[in-house]
Image (tube, rainbow, N blue to C red; front, side):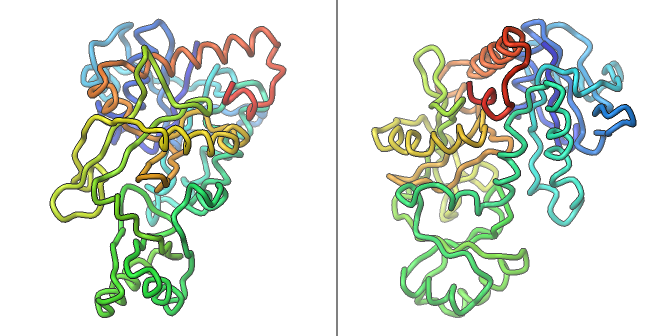
Length: 347
């Protein structure tokens, strides 16, 4: 099986990233794992998509550290591969990371992936589904029952009125990720409120969201694969992120800490409610962030943290992902590639 991973920049990939862990799992099972910079894709005159790609030289790796050492090292194998002839193209780049830097790179992987899948390569997550999820507005397409009350606007007056009605609210940019420019605002602090609105408004539209008091205890990241909670060897791929000090954000690189997740009926209920749309949109691997009986976010672009779940649960969930990729490639062989990409993505 030949798998290509599209990333923002190979140079910034790290040993602990989920993409790296998947590369190790694929390589150790005898598959080819190619890593492709989003800027190295090309549509050639023969109507095939090709890319300058990198692959590690060894057949087996102990861990992500050794894998990344070789991927970044002088012995790395570099070839111009035909993307259309890969078995799987895994889109693991994060468009929001390109904000204000390389605007052209935001949709490049989707555009090239959409063309490549015409010739049979399985593209995950489905590029047409990902195009709908280019910003956090995608979250509003899910049932109201799973979402906090939300206003999306650039009108400062409307945002202030929303905060006054709520008493407390979270404001954040419509385009953004990783806890960047996320503020908890209060109606009894109008001066700070105006400053924070101005700070977030510089990035475009503002999301003003109902504050969930249970967020003070952190949130739970649960992975879904093929529309179902990812389970391997009797364990679910999940973990809790707990706030650090007075920071309201629980994102790990925003100061949060890890803890083992105890999944509840509410968690599985939320996963079941969002499942139909995720399947409809061809979302193979997704991370949902849960607070109480609500979702805070649905992460469909390069959801990370499988390594954190592995550390806490003692199970290598990357093996389950590779198992699923192998099955999809087999289906394509059995049925002579006679499936739509969006359907195969969650089979």
